Picture 1: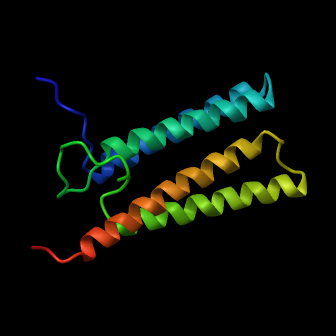
Picture 2: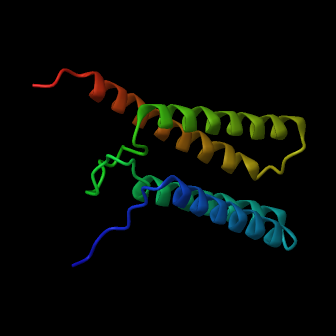
Length: 137
């Protein structure tokens, strides 16, 4: 019987994210030696893959091991709001770098994708907030 991978312990989640961050930075820097745009695009793609993996496999301690609804990215609204705001700040910082001329033009891809991921986390948090506030029958 096939069982889906679910990660519930905080230390395992942190470990996965540290390994992913190191891999993303190493790939981005390594490929930037060949072409800055290539390094940036690969790092962005790996970031998206990490977010998708985490949203599907990381679970809260009391959360079901069954598949989540497509829109659910975190176990609690607070987690979604926190990640959404942090990703919006990151996108804004990158956009500022583009406007000031310190970031490569291809960074607009990262700004756009970061804003989309942030919107996903904020949407998830909002829906979780509404569903937890709804009266139970």
